[in-house]
Length: 392
Image (tube, rainbow, N blue to C red; front, side, top):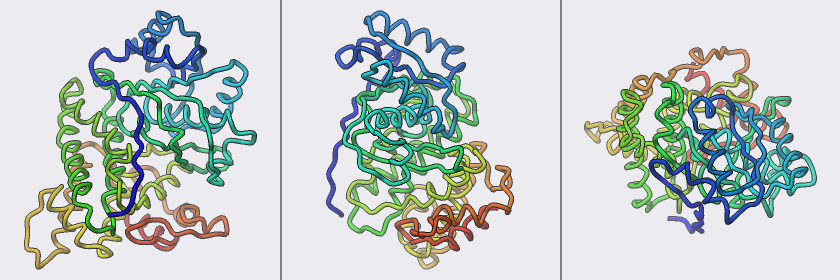
């Protein structure tokens, strides 16, 4: 087990009607708030009115910035930065899913940066401050409500990059599972694939003596999968949503990755799909993850046997570990299929024309400085291209 420094300060306010408390929760921390959201969805559901009423009841001044889209755009972030500077905003309230929260985090750190905020993502610059961010979660998926990370798409450059800093962990996050009841089936499925991938990126490691976090990863995966099928069948199953919603938070607040090397190749490969084709992140991960598993599993077959047996329930002879692993991967694919997720790049509308370019972008080869991705097995652009081909 590796050394680690655990700091997960986000306050989680969980349960029914908790979103109605947002004004009182923010009052000690802010005088003027930026309310950041997508648009019609929170107004149609009544959430917008409830949030506004709560802010007004606590005499909090606020302005609004809507218009966030999936794979949140740099252009809106830049608009938000200028708006916050002009209006003297001292806290950002993100009402939505991962895209809204990631956009809010980008604005929060961009306010204190003299140049273009994209330089922080592109050059990995260290930040020393960010505005506090609070969230009301409406889509359990990205785990951004308590994570240190943010991902933004530069639509002009067709690049999607992530950045992480503990300055970006939200001050507090409200999670009322009732707010998930109206999610369409595709968003439920994409969210589940995303949170499962966050666990896979941490679980598949070459680090030894990680029994505790192994077990936490395995239990969280089994819990999410079991309850995801329940909410897929009945979107108003509150108890199942509790398990899925909080599971998404645990999947990405860094607890499950403590003391172990991590991978993150699938996320790197998927970002190229989203950047060029604007596909849903979870859908892209559902396609790429089984292909990645088939390509890399022999690099640490014991880890994949453990996954197949402990998570996917595979039984078989340990004299034939390949068969156990491949059955586990097949069962994962079957689960994704039950959730209504795509299984191939073709289903995502992606042909062969950009595969090599995406592979080279994912590893930096396209920019003249290749850095292999992945922790379990180092992947160069030729490896990534083969995985894309496996996923066709």
